[in-house]
Length: 101
Image (cartoon, rainbow, N blue to C red; front, side):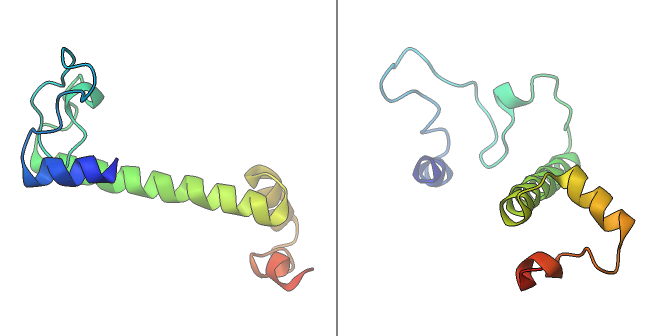
């Protein structure tokens, strides 16, 4: 996937057509921004709005990754961990699972 993205950055629009099914292609879009079919209502019309949207998407991705890592370390869900932390904030922190407690 990233190789195709890099090729598209080097040669704008070169990856808009499906390599196997030539009759399928994407509408013209801005390279580096997932617009087009991913933004059908044009919620980000300005460059500033696009940058904010991408920053929020990256933050959401990191939040999800944190939840997955938290579950793998503690074997509990995020809400259960939150309730446990709120019941005893001094002894239920991120450090305790790492110490083996």
